[in-house]
Amino acid sequence: MISLATDFGSPYPAAMKGVIRRETDAELVDIAHDLPRGDPRAAAFWLRFVLPEFPPAVHCAVVDPGVGTDRAAIVVRAGRHAIVAPDNGLAMPPARALAAATGDGMDDFDVFEIDAADPASATFHGRDVFAPMAATVRAKAWDSAVGVDDALASLLDLTPLSPTDGYVDLSLPEPTVERDAAGEPATIEGEVLVVDGFGNAITNVPGGLVRDFDRLLVNDIGPVPVVRTFGAVEVGARLVTVGSHGFLECDVNDGRGADAFDLAPGAAVRFVPA
Image (tube, rainbow, N blue to C red; front, side, top):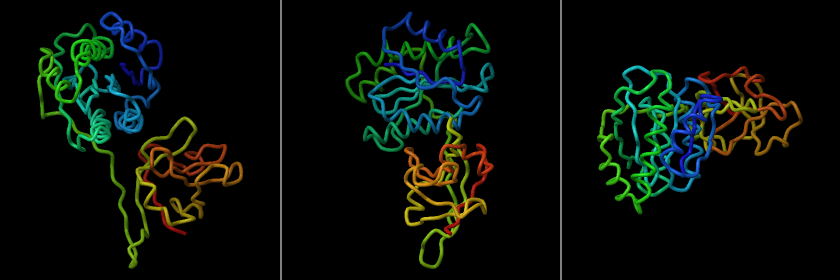
């Protein structure tokens, strides 16, 4: 299959699908076309969460604030998956997650630069560069690949691609943890990575850091209960929980946590056991 993930809204993804269909009859799966606009880091977070759930596939991911500039276009081989994306870092966290999920090791991926000379448009490389490349990888490389070595060899044989180690890397930020004399977290300084469609403010703090705490101060708000489910608190009440992605969220039962905690993507967030 070929998956598609963009910040394009509608109808631009339809044009990408038309291009792909001219080259291959692969199943097309829409991941999202409402990713936070112009935010490669947010796209990287969501793709790191979603792509490991897929069987081997080609993933076309386009969140591209540098479209039309001299930024490169790349294909990343991670296990038996390929990610076709702009070279702005968004492919790296999901590539590492895919490599880890397939048992290849955290850093076992290969990056290829696309020779994308003279695309038809300077503003729609999703249609003119990334969709055609996803179709080419699927039709000419992945069809015959039966393992990681075959997938890599197939990409090396594609003339529009050349191996590169000069790609833009991106790693999601790590929280800072101050511990008490017993070695337990006393203060955790983190950051909001994304706010989802429910208004949940998802941070970069791994849930395991607060597994022994029942209540937290969140930027001096609270104490706020740490619970497993939204229904553990009253409707409208604040809560902290570990989302399905494994990170702490600042939420409200049947409400918008980002508003209740005054948080937005990129905002600093401090957790103190209460």
